[in-house]
Image 1 (cartoon, rainbow, N blue to C red):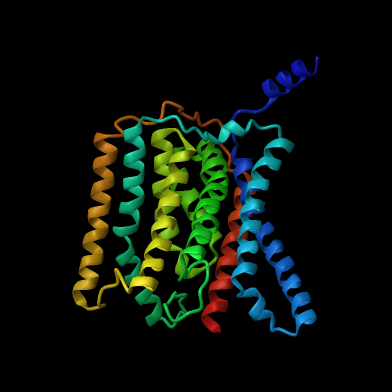
Image 2: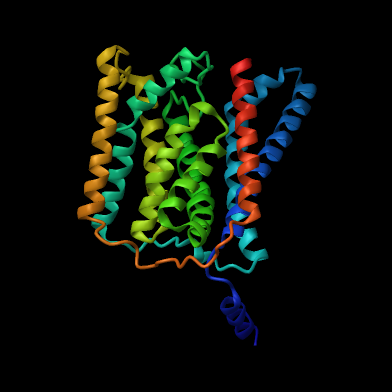
Amino acid sequence: MKNEQNSQQMIDRRKFYSQDDSGKVYIFALALPILLSIVFVLIANVISGATGLKSEQITDNIWFTTVAQIATAGLFIGIFFVYNKVNKIDNRSACFKTKMPWHTYLIIIAVGIVSLFGVQYFIGAVDDLLKLMGYPLEEPSPDLPESLINPKSFGIFALSVFVTCVLPAISEELLFRGVIFQGLRRRFGDVASVLLSSLMFALMHQNLQQLVYPFFLGTIMSWLVLRTGSLFSSVLVHFTNNFLTILFTYLSNVTSFSLELPEVWWFYLLAVLLLAATFVVFYLIDRFYFKHKSSEEVERTENKTSKYIYISLSIAVVLFLFLSIYNFLI
């Protein structure tokens, strides 16, 4: 009898996301990490009071940041499963399927590599523009203390791979390409959903410096989910991108190897040429490998944009502008 009830519950579960789901989940993805960060600040203050250390010494501690990032990833994963359970949505609606041809995996990894190397110098040029505007940039340096984004030993590098590569690739993709992107497709269609979900992903970082590249990467990951019909493709690209970033930072610290180039006139020309070449490569992959869209077409059945989309985007834009102006002023 119990097995029959469980089977019936599975049958009754909704097997798709709506734009309402996209908006609501985006609100949770914006608000709950802020609340979590407040909790960690309070914990840091309590520890500071008990030990006499400055709160900055605690929040900058590598083990404190590790716990905080693991908690954030766990929060995102929790949002996914709890939201699905409360709203009776099948978890498989996120299309987390790993069964793909082996050569598709190679193509996906190649896309992740090209996404980083083809765009990093253009992002460097954008950073230079922000510097001219007086915007304070976050720039890891070998002179900075060891951290998750600046590993100097193999142990911290391995920890960083798990905390900054594996966990975000899974947790963020479950929400942004698994729920938000899929839900938007029922209202806006494929192209608009790719662009809108990528904008939402970029705004989630709440940092002017981290606006252009997350938007670009979000677009690529949404495109891959669209073409492969599998969320695992975006997880793999997300991981590849973060892993290469951490790997080259680690190699730079231990061997002085660096991909940095002198910022002279030809640097900016190279940045533009590599960006153009990247788009050409992606066009060729789409044209000659992903000849057809995913077989799982989504019918546009909703004609009116959900209020939750407007609310969530408004929250994201306000937070983004506030924090960007705050960083600029300090």
